[in-house]
Amino acid sequence: QRRPGVWRYRELLPAVSGVKPVSIGEGATPLVELENIGRMLGFRRLYAKNEGQNPTGSFKDRGMTVAVTLAKAAGARALVVASTGNTAASVSAYGARAGLRRIVVVPRGKTALGKLAQSVLYGADIVEIEGSFDDALRAVMEAVGRDARLYPLNSFNPWRLEGQKTLAYEVVEALGGEPPDWVVVPVGNAGNISAIWKGFRELHRHGLIDRLPRMAGVQAEGAAPLARAWRKGLNEPLFVDKPETRATAIRIGHPVNWPKAMRAVRESNGVFTMVSDREILRAQAMLARLEGVAVEPASAASLAGLIKLVEEGVISSDETVVIVLTGHGLKDPQAMLEAGARRYVAAGVEDAVKLVTSLA
Ligand SMILES: Cc1ncc(COP(=O)(O)O)c(/C=C/C(=O)C(=O)O)c1O
Image (cartoon, rainbow, N blue to C red; front, side, top):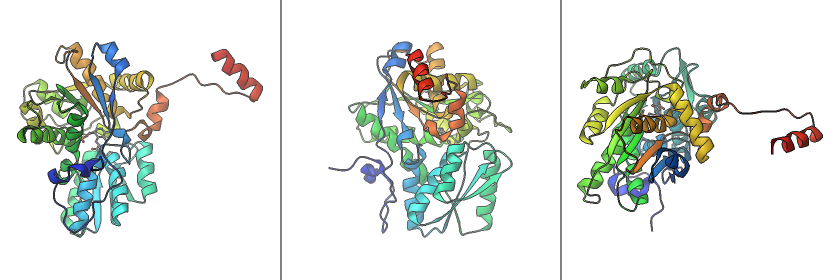
């Protein structure tokens, strides 16, 4: 009986010879039924794949366990990534466990506090670049070109996507061997939607499922190169030079995986859509206050996108839908506080007793 998690599917992952997988217990995340939000939207079968329950709090751990294991087997010395924060946190943890050096390049002032704190605690060397994620990625690629000791792990690295595809396997197992009708995924660098589609397509090719889900990629309006192109029926993204969104995890203007993501949406007869920051933050509050699920803003884009696609009649509420919640709320405590709540200061015990009873 195999333990649950990414390596449960080792026959469908790249073979790792000579090294033990670098694992911190990633994968096997809950598929939570959203009963209250489902009732609100008219769904009977609405689920959330809660990737915030991974070891470093995002789906990135699925890819990192595979990519860092292979990097170690290849004798890598110094892992390097550009990141909006979650990839940095994940490579910092997995690289630490593998005993490798880690260098992360993140946008200065635009990396959520929780993610920065993780990279600091895990002990990575942190370069905060005055610029966007896209500038950070350009810097990493330039550095890698100049110094062979650097081992890049951004999501053009296929092993990252190999690990991330296991989300599809877990969803099918959790739904009793059936795929959902739709999978809704927030899209930044566009690796995750590509990886998840690959997982479903493999199950279909192996005859384990007899139909495929439709993929919906959701972007923030201020950082929506794919959604804007999709709306105009274009085959190439409308790249965004200065992406802007409060959902800083997906504040990406030049997604490296755009060809795979466009193919995933096209092949699955899916869609790209985009939502405003207001819709994202509203969805974040709904998940917390109706379902008890805390996610960072970028994660909530999947719920915001679902709501929009239902309103537009693209997704119907009698379909089975899985929204992917990609990162835990604690990643961005500032955003959590911005949601606002009634907060009182009690001078002491007696004052607290009065306040508590007045609030009952
Ligand atoms: C919470 C959260 N939700 C969605 C995405 C988008 O996934 P991709 O479309 O595969 O990029 C990210 C991506 C983060 C980074 O790209 C990074 O960490 O550098 C994320 O952290």
